[in-house]
Length: 263
Image 1 (cartoon, rainbow, N blue to C red):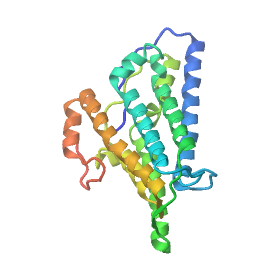
Image 2 (image 1 turned 45 degrees about the vertical axis):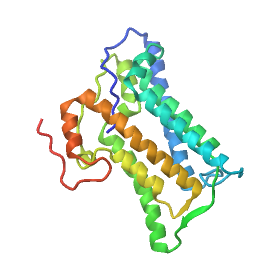
Image 3 (image 1 turned 60 degrees about the horizontal axis):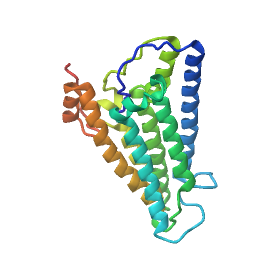
C-alpha cells in the first residue's frame, strides 16, 4: 500500500503567487507522468510505437542486457532513495515541502523516459503463443494488469500518491495531513494490488523475447525489494495496526476472506 508518509505540515507563509506556482507545478508534473506512463504501457506491449521493448538497432551482446539492467537499477535507486524518510527530510530543505511529492513524481517520470529512450532490444524469442484463445487471453491479462494498477491508486488516495493533494492544500492554505491507513476494496484481500497489477502486466505477453524477459524480471525484482523497504516505512509510520495487517494478509496474491480491522 503506497502512501506519502511525509510528516504533517501546516500552511506556509508563501505568497499567493508562490502557492499558485506550486499548484501548477504539481499539476504539470502529474500530467507529464500520466502521459509518460501511457507511453510506457504501449512500449511494454509493443503497441503502435516506432520504438518498443523489442525494436531498435541491435548491438553486440552482452552490452544490451547490461545497459537494460543498468536502466532498471537506476529506476529502482531513484524510487527507493527518494521515498526514504531521511532523504525527504534533507530534500525538503531545498524543495518546498508541499512540492516534495510532485518533485518525486517528476524525477520518476524523467527516469522512466530514460528507460524507454535508451532501452536496448534483445528480440530472441523465449516463447510465442499463436493459438487464438491463449493469445487473446494473454492480451486480456496484459490489459487487466494495468487496469488493476490504476484502480489500486484510487483505492488508497490517487491524488495524494501523485502529489496533487499536497499542492492543493498548500494553495488553499490548509494544513496537510498524511492519508490515514485504510484497507479498502482489493487492499482488504492483499497488501499490494498495485504491484500485483505491475507483475501481471509485465509477464502477460503472447510473445516473450529476451529483452522483454529482462524488463519483466528486472522490474519484478525491484518490486520485491521495494516492497520490503516500503513496508518497513509503513510499519514505522502506522505502527501496530499495520503490523497486524501485514501478519494477516498476503503481499501479492489475493485472499478470499477479506481483512477485518478491529481497531
